[in-house]
Image (cartoon, rainbow, N blue to C red; front, side, top):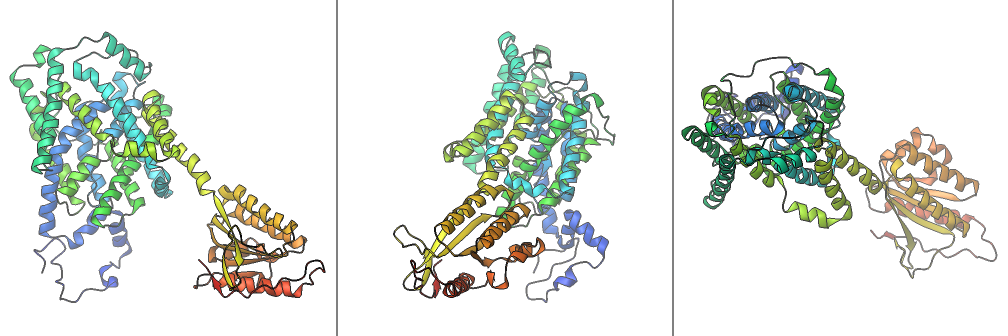
Length: 618
């Protein structure tokens, strides 16, 4: 029996009759649409009190981490801490309602905040907040376009080396940026100067504030100690960041550190984010749009990676396009409530899963808890020292680096090492958002030639009648060529296909009269691939050479018919794929033998005695 009744009623016991699939699916089209597009609503159909309790406790646990992270990530992005809290309220709630992942938590994240900081570098301080909100609107818009055209699945073609390189470069960039807050330095340099140039001026000319540095390093040490305790005592849900933030805020208040020169967060309004359409900064739209494309891509990569990681552990099915929709709607909503861009959080999602979250409603409870904390404790947040948050961010930055994956990818292949190095160096030397575009472009540029590879295998018929791959010492039958091609039959493989077909033509020059072309392993034919195949068939026909196609798959057969290539072939030249391995190849070879038998062989080269093939060796 189930443990309790839920919003959707008690679930049936295992020994009771179950409803059929048709009975479980709602008949109304609008209701099916709502269930599909708002997965959180669909989860209420079988919700129970046990699930409600699990989601509520998980939401509270996530909120204890979300509050300090939201403030820290807002500061990392270069905007007031309050707007990080607004993002943690609005984006988390909206993302949870629409996400197909039950445990994914959206909101401000470290990697996206670093990208926002880089995108806002040339913007004057008085316009940074408005541009950050505009950026959130643009990011959401681009993600909605990706959803509309169902391009979210293309992210699987982006090498994970891009993420490794980005997190490495972005982490170092965050450490460099937060050193000024850690040591109490005043930022120097013009907004139009490169980040590294401004950092260098700050380091060289900055005067270290002792109290600020002491507070920052104390916060770093406290976080590290608490995490060691968490690991040894196996308390994964211990809110280490929240405890450090509370302790540092109390220390700043008790010892009057603000009066002694330690910068604090300042006033945070004890109010919820109100609806306010974003004011578009037209003079910066061009620059912000370029950055928004990169941040939108980065956000989707981060969210999809975490959702897939959770799904692999929980066994839930993911709708990647729905996940893209949830990210887009979450960022758009954030823009209309004065929030900054965000994504699926690696840290908070993992905590949500570990805390036992049952459904998307844990994210809604987390957003509600952050809102309540903002209303009740915002006046006390003004005492939180900026150096303490800088220390937390620096520790978090080093935690972002995949210390196991980094050397693994650098050693794996030159392809991976090059992408990691190029992405990381671009993050530091150019810009964070541009490095994402570089990494994605490199993934596609280096992956397309790999996808375009096509292999060729020559087969022979042994004296026992077995068709197998030709070995080095196997004799060659001059009159019959049996060859198999394997790969993608699309424009990217056209050069490789031409090389293999030219090789077949060279064998015709050497005397081959019939070619059995095994095409069972050719996949995803397109117009270019079909045209190259048609050109070869026409050339062979003009030379009086018969080409027999074996193992023709349904998609290739359809392409041959719709493009008119079949007009260059007779019915006995095409042998479709069969359920038995090698059966179509054996039938094609039998046809080829019959063709050779009907041909009059030259007196100087009598007809070879070809054994009848009886078996195809896989």
